[in-house]
Image (cartoon, rainbow, N blue to C red; front, top):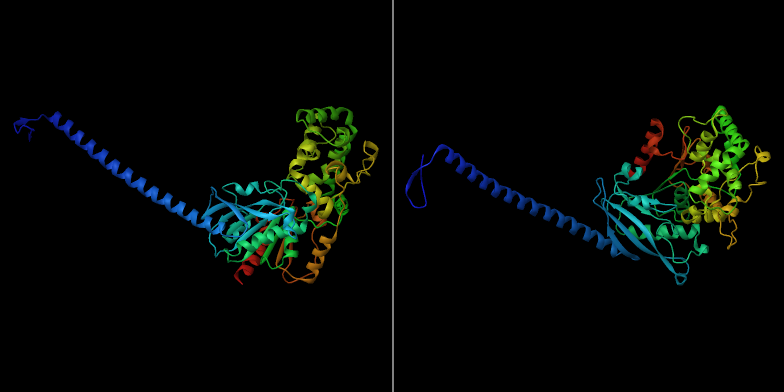
Amino acid sequence: MIVHSPGHKMQRISFFQLIFYSRKVLLIVIIILSFVVSVTAQMSYSIELWEETKYDTLITNDFLELDAVEFVEPMQFEGDFAGKYKLLVRQPLDPEDPSKGSFLQNVIINHKDFSFPTVVITEGYNADYATFPAYENELTHFTGGNQICIEHRYFGNSIPDKMDWQYLTVENAAADQHRIIDMLKELYKGKWISTGISKGGQTALYHRTLYPEDVNITVAYVNPLNFNVEDGRHEGFIEKNGDPEERKDIREFQLEILSRRDSIFPLFQDFIDSNHYNFRISSEEIYDYCVLEYSFAYWQWHPEENKIPGKESSNEALFHHLISISSPDYFAEQSLTKYQPFFIQAATELGYYGYDITPFDSLMIIEDAEGYLYEIFLPDTVCFSFDNNMNKKVVKFLEKEDPRIIFIYGEYDPWSASAVEFPEKKNMTKFVNPKGNHGSRINNLPDPMKTKVLKILDNWLDE
């Protein structure tokens, strides 16, 4: 083959030279094409990134234009949402008197479309879990809509500078939720579903009672309606709960832990010391309370298989099982940083459960468990008293009205002892998950029951 050199002299190129030059030309072509593809990809990515940023900016501005919203931050998310945002909403400590001060309340929004249904989670505690990119409530999944999680006042990051307990009331918390929902309804035009689990379910029910028109539907999970600090119904429930053989195993285990106090307590004390737990009463008394709490905690999170160690078990096996079900950290002062607001609400309006020490009194150090909430969990600098008026309002509301509410309970869950009761109505419905515990949800109901719940929801959403 003949080619022209730069000097226009004829040269004969060998076969191997030809191969060399051809590969060189091919390499140059590949480099040029790679550069073009890379630039094109970069431009495409930049356009996509710009479009996402532009979208986030538009939604952020929509939120910032709402009254009381002081901060909006786009967040990472997974799933088929269009965006996720953290809002800080300025709330008055006393809705009746804004001069008393204010705090910033966390609101986490998974946005899909302003015209779609909106699920609002009336959280009873902090809402840290809602910040996880993959978090999606089961109702959000069922409806394919938007999701809003409202952190409860005095929990998580939604706390005032000064923890003045007089403003931690059911009515004030419901006013927080009402203000946020009312404000966001300016944007979200679809139907609204409120929901919550346990204390969050209580919160949803209280909010629905005080502001019945805020939402179209409520789904409350495993929420009690207690009528006293120590309601009194839970102890009897536990005595008759589940299978007789399982109840027998539970009682024998509790008695064995108490009977072997001299051998097991040193393990218990070592566990306390190694975790640096502190208590407002002696660790010997806490040992008794862990035994009393055991039966409630066992049924609340009822294990699928009965693995209660028997009398033939070693001290270590008995101790480790006790700790796995009823750990002393529940009673420790370290837990109060996170949960003291809850115990204060339990002592003032929400109510709680008590313990029956009758089967164990001869083996216990404590003489009586009455008033344990005040002794172990509440600050001794403030005097708290129980007010049942709010729960009476709920009862009156459910008797008089017929709101669209679905209640989900677990058959074995001790909180079902104080489940919400109401006369038979067209709309209000209760579903009890057979052998279900405190983790009972629509997703783990038996298929016929789950189908019925979803059909009710579909009908309500379609109307």
